[in-house]
Image (tube, rainbow, N blue to C red; front, side, top):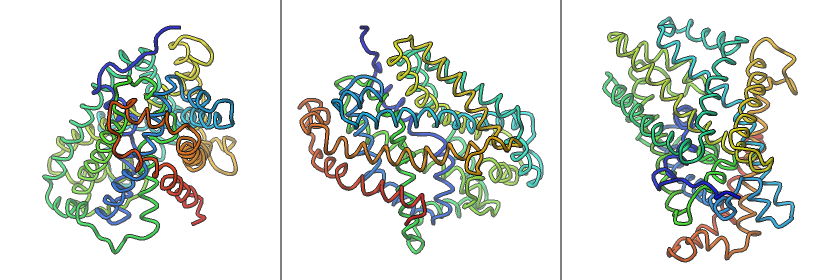
Length: 451
């Protein structure tokens, strides 16, 4: 049996795992949720939720992955010792696989918008841009083409292995993502009236804080950290024994929050400068923002053109880093469980996800037959994975590590077998036994409109 691959450096560990956590949820979902929930008050609650929920749940998956040194399904199976707990690992792999399929469709939309920015198709009136997104997303061919492109790009990275593929790509993609983000932030903050957007982002309005705001921040912290998708567990299986799991989780949480806040600084100053409501919802990046960029930089069309291009390049990079980690979950599973080469496992994932992604894309158009329970296949995948599979997986993982896995094993991994003090071990254990399960249960019930 060949020696298992490892990340080659501490920087590689942080950038690759942060790339998994930093995705469209940070650049797209976080800003519009902040806009809907009163600005800085939401941010403060979100950071608290990352500390209480995101980081402890991330450490859970790090402990499982590194201790077992294998793919997510086998890792849970190895620690479960023949008990039904093993099914939690398979649930994570399945969730990651299904998310890869439809997330690639949305990622492909970002590539289309890069193309549209290059050829000047987004320089129309607001109504045209709105109909542009609707007609493109419902087109039977274009979204599938871009889905294939983004998945083949992901395949190329994953098929080259952990150190030469994933780590090397992360060291290029993540710094580039930050540079693009900072460039757009500077340009946005220099617009007339941008100060109002900055004030909105950083001035907390606690009068708007209610149960829904808290639960929304809780859910955002859970999903933005890639909990229960198998990504963290799989990546942790490539960690060396010297990797400080707690320090890594904290650093990744800081990067996750920083990107989200910078995304707010990128969007809100520009939105306020042209009088656009910052709570535009899910349509923000594909309908509202092209109009914002056009109007904000109307006196400097070349600058507006460049900013629009950079913005969708940024989105594509964020989507790609997450797709790489999602793809790796299934690639590691198939290659190790079917005893085939990494390249064959990667092709199995790529081709099957292209097929499933194509059906998801077509379901948004005129193909009424591609529906379940009266919803497009795309929406069904999104609902089942995001609102059912991930909360259940995260909830069960907390119980598994907190109550079933031997406390000595958890402590040994947490303290790197006694080489570190582990001062907050009891705080971590309390969180995963009590605080995190309750928080995830609240997320689950809130999404189903039960509370």
